[in-house]
Length: 365
Image (cartoon, rainbow, N blue to C red; front, side, top):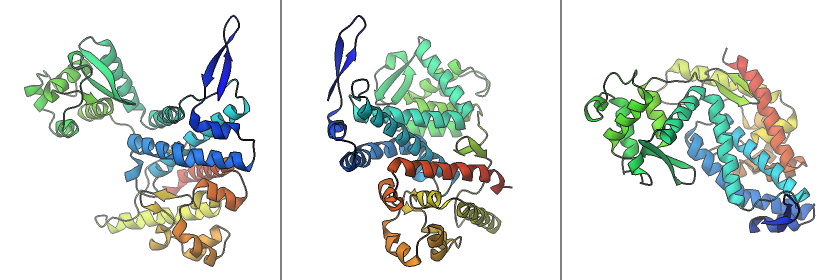
């Protein structure tokens, strides 16, 4: 689809929408339009969003039902919500809005959502990253360049455009565990903790003999200089709560820790039961981790039985049993069950997390 944008002084310029969007943009609002929108999201947008969040936030290794898992799911929902709003704007105002590169737009939108999350959760680390970025772009001996999409490398200016040496990440991990090597092979004078960022970067690059990813440099410098953020987690809507049990079970854990975690999950389950029915359905039927549905863990840990879960979902135990192997459901399937739109499912789940976030302030007390 080609839209005409007004130019200063009169006239118009053509902007072409991505071919992926054309069937959706051309379809009249209704069932066919909704189907095409769902296809756009499930086949093209959501796999990319999930991959980027997994890469930037490490969600694939986050324990199920942990605050970090809820946070990354909120980042996912935020990205989808903004995307849906933009697509609706494109459909309603085809002459004023278009997306020429759909996957590129989704990627930028998701990276921005991840950045906003990290900026809120790790303010000290974020400030350090900005300081390093400034040095790498303004100090003539250093350089910062994009190696791949959204993958930034830093190093000496003479290295500009080079790739990372094999084993670079492992070497940086070794450096974090044995910082005195910088004083020998990196020619760093004085302590690592008191060194200026310029001197520390110079020593790291001399020792490493290779460019490094910006995020890895941030982690390394933060560890070397003892820069840490207080672990305060936002579940949704800015609501925060302190440290609380994250994993369900671990054979290395003490009995006291396991009991504490189970009590936390039991209290969390009680709070879920206080949510409105549609919020419970939107939340519980979509809970997932790297292995699949999180609901399956509730009976295994003794937190809730199949019948109790079915009651919370306002369905019979037999119906839940038939549905069990299909869990977790995507938002389209949940919207069909509730008789609402996909956007309303996202809003219901977000409202549920906001309420749980407020209640979670007291769960760890």
